[in-house]
Length: 203
Image 1 (cartoon, helix red, strand yellow):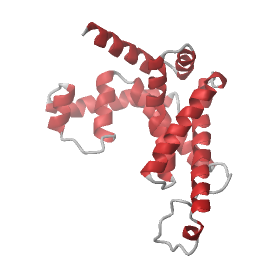
Image 2 (cartoon, rainbow, N blue to C red):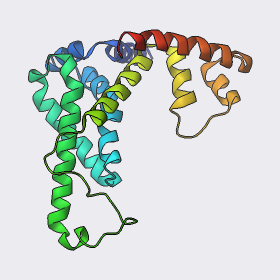
Image 3 (cartoon, rainbow, N blue to C red):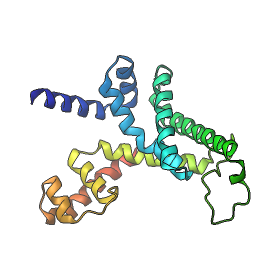
Image 4 (cartoon, helix red, strand yellow):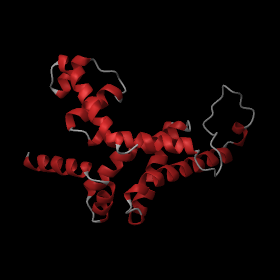
């Protein structure tokens, strides 16, 4: 039991660290730091093949490939401010690679498509992301990081209210974070105000 609690405390500690600290810890061989780094950015990585309308299997392959490239590039990514842009660029290139492979393997599928057909291969070749799309992905990651920086109860509440795939009732939310149902509204307002202050320094 004590070992489990110690492991949990260590995971929580790494989850609160800045990217630069996580990268340094990864290079020192701390497995929990690597898990924390991947957990922090897995949503960002997956969002790019999803936006490109690639299949779930392709998205999973891209995620694994990007994680491997990240592991191999850690020593060059000590500047934490570059990780987000590096991940976006690397993941986009992996999407190009998959799309180009599919075009080669299925040349007939790339012709005669109408507007209602599958657009999974419509990824521009070797063209940088549009500034608007790059900015959107970066802002989404900033919001996720800011939510993670909130106190634990606020972070959980915001995720349940705005990020939960299946909508939860107030009763379910209250039960999970152990507050009265009547407190959810006021707590949400306070948490959003805290989030607003954090975002004011980042956006």
